[in-house]
Length: 341
Ligand SMILES: C[S@@+](CC[C@H](N)C(=O)[O-])C[C@H]1O[C@@H](n2cnc3c(N)ncnc32)[C@H](O)[C@@H]1O
Image (cartoon, rainbow, N blue to C red; front, side, top):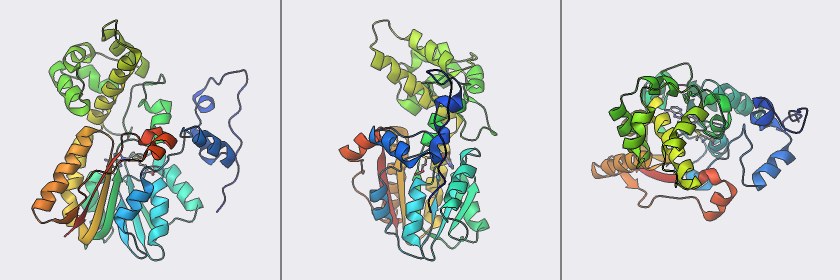
């Protein structure tokens, strides 16, 4: 179904000043030619998300009409749209996402394309609640597949007010669900320096964790740029620009993982998979850094040894050079999968 054309945000002067002028999160429904041009430049138009390793994921899941499964991280619905097409007619997909801001937009967009109940169910919830959501939906007898595309969506990264990106100045929040838990600013304001050093090491392999932690802990940072400035200033003067940027990126990643408790919820999801999948059911998980991939690899390998999984992909699947070129955000992606015994 074609979407109505919407005009791009206009602004006066030579440069945009306000978020909604500067960033194109509202461009999701923009002129398709404009979106295609932005994508051809290897960029993701803000307000949209390009599904990563899509063909590989679809083939791993061996989808057939009538299947029932879960998208644990619905995001923009990029993977979900293709999965819905592959399981139609008669198939059912349950989409989960913690984000109360993006989920309604995604559901409205999917509904405009005809994806509604009973083919598509959605819950705003953490995937750590998988078992209870399945029971509540009457799917306690099992699902044919589950996939998760971990981390942040492009919409979350590109919406400055969410405070995920060091590239734009915004309140230091970083919560996927801003209605729950502590913001990154609150976390740092009370963080114990030793604990923060551990977080920087474990969540992002930060080599300067012990130097940086005492400078960042128990300190209130109002904005992303304030935090980025203190990290930058803490580095030796001779540091190369790429080194400074990489350090800032790692520190932001580590704090985001902590604030959203990402490793703990991933482990809870992995623990619930064996009971959730029917015999022959498939799981595919896309991760974006070593801490996630390690956990996925370990859980699937342990399941294979214990006879829970009949088959586990022996090699991690990475995006092709072509995909990485077309979508630089795919660069770090790793896909692992298994089939339930
Ligand atoms: C990389 S995006 C998914 C993109 C999606 N596959 C697509 O093609 O549009 C990850 C999404 O997972 C959500 N998410 C992250 N952790 C979650 C969790 N523990 N439970 C539920 N959703 C989560 C984020 O809010 C985000 O929308």
